Length: 294
Ligand code: CCH
Image (cartoon, rainbow, N blue to C red; front, top):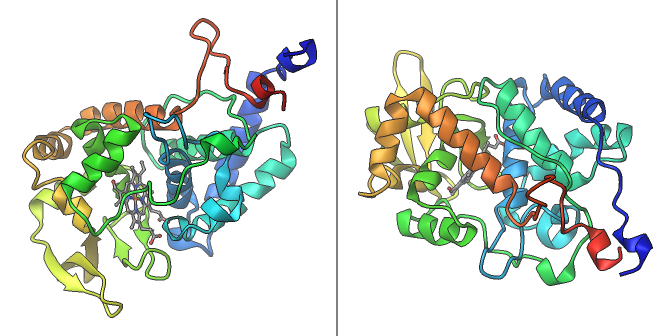
């Protein structure tokens, strides 16, 4: 490569990144949106941006911010995430130096923390350069109508084990399902903008009944007479409590919030790094667009 190509953009300073974090924080409150918060959908954006990774072919992952383009952006699996991307557009306008791939992953991390969750390790440096040889096909994200073996198939492909699958699933403490997005309907917990391990406790402690929605979609429901609220679980959410090797982790996280926070932070941080290659000494990213000459 030419000397021009080997020059990397100067990494952002701490104060530049701090300004981005503050502007993400400032947009979390959205009185006219779901439960008054953009937080949960930002967490889902971060996850779907990274969760296309395939370790065997080193394709997919957050690099490239492929959801900006129709093939990935209009994938039915990503329905509704345009709201998250739109919320973040004001931050991108104000700080044009940050890549979308860094912004989307950082927003998930900032949102988790702001909603009472752990500090998730995050490093910048992702590229928005779209490498055509790394594009993920559709169908790499999990299907909520299936069971534990499907989860294993999807998450092993990213390099995650059973314990990590269960820890990641704890993100369903946040947010809700939208019938016009996924076909499922409702929130998992009573406080869907508050990160906690309640999801695991509810999976274990409530009696979940199958329910078929008017669109024919099957989920599980619990109606609490006292508070007159209905909570939901996806088939995959209950599957992790049935699988002999995942169930002990559901039990552990239901009992030990600190353990869940620590394990979630580690695995969510790992998810957001999939496909990103760094110099082990400096942390500087190696697979930027410069590597390919732009
Ligand atoms: Fe999830 N998730 N998710 N999920 N998810 C949905 C919503 C959220 C699955 C299915 C669904 C993770 C793993 C899985 C969030 C974070 C994570 C919805 C409803 C479905 C369906 C979408 C809608 O209708 O808007 C399945 C299957 C899996 C398999 O493991 C992981 C991993 C994470 C993050 C670490 C969050 C947050 C939401 C709420 C989004 C919102 O808009 O409120």
